Length: 170
Image (tube, rainbow, N blue to C red; front, side):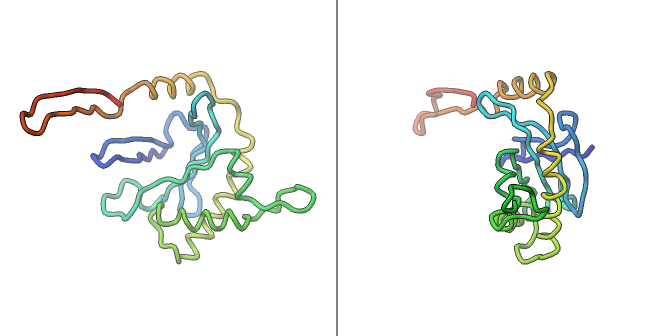
């Protein structure tokens, strides 16, 4: 399985996609699509996380970001006919959002092939996102435990004396 970390300014992973906690990971049209669950306040949401397959873990890439789409947001990105059935193509809003996501994924905004590939990923994995089951217990426990771990230690020191005023973990 491919694992892709989103790194902080210090190079530490802030969010990791793919791997054991993912429901399904697949490579398609130059992108990696990972169907997984993310935690928001009290809910575990099915989420489609997309990143570029060609610049994964490449230090020299312009951007190695990820585009995450929840099940609720996916309905805004696909087009429906007058009867409420999906047409199999992206909505105007979906195309605009995909254009905005291209630089985040390390692609040029004017690259039509990259845009069409990204839209194809949305159309291929959107239905699977809609059919994702409830988050299994092991994933829920993993996300809750991960939330409890502090990401950064912050220390406030006085400029003049160098004395530590306070310390906290975020």
